[in-house]
Image 1: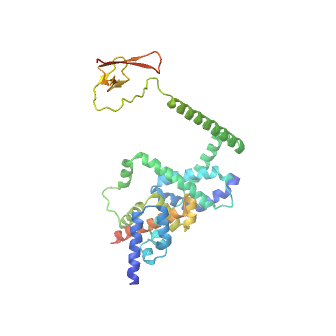
Image 2: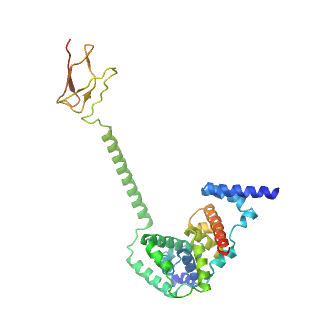
Image 3: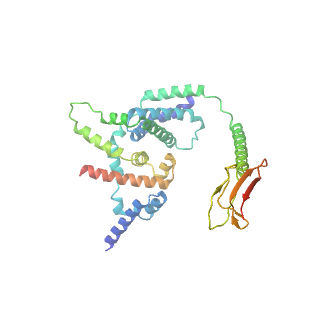
Length: 165
Length: 179
């Protein structure tokens, strides 16, 4: 375990961003936890083969991104029934608070984007990565990331204007 | 006028973006116009907008129990994983497998080719020839072959028999005509 000290320190420090990335993609806490756990298992297992000159956070995000995609595929298999049940769940006889409405609006705006667009936006807007770095993390061409980013930003702006207007 | 031209330009680029959903083409549109045009950039959500939307995600923390759980799982999984052959051996094994599969596929393809190139025992090609009069005769003994029109001594044949012989490539056609 001694040799994995650096990795565990990294997880303690950057675990929040990993979890928020998974949560942003999967929109659901238990799924995000599962994806994170699987990603950490893989990080620990392949830690010895990791090139220390490379960016550890990018590596971790790449693994986590693929685990999130796996979770999304798994979820698709369960069908729409469980999804609807989970999304429509709200305690009865309670007036929704302003905070709840605001939060659910923001969530709904963000959730209308495709997973790849959400991933690009999160990495660009929240983590501050450039298109080239995002392409490295997601495993696609820089041009593709630029296109996704442009499309997602445009869609988001439109949705925001619609929500405010 | 300049502003109007720019608007038309933006509209055309937007139209092309919608009409051609090719990533490389869209990338080119981004490079020539969209990333530089201030008007088009105004239509995009900024970093600040995104940060405001994902504000809730900033306070998220990774549960400590999750790291412990994952470490335990990784340790158990490492014990269970069978020893992987070293790099060189696995490469050799992969190559052997690839060669064997290639040979097998090649032999199968050759076999199929040979099989389909053989003429079947029952297949008999026959062209009846041009005629303006059609009379129908059919063989009673050999049903795989039928002749629509046969001339004998310059006249349409009155009766026709087709016999199959023991030789697979030989049939006998018996034609009768009355003068």
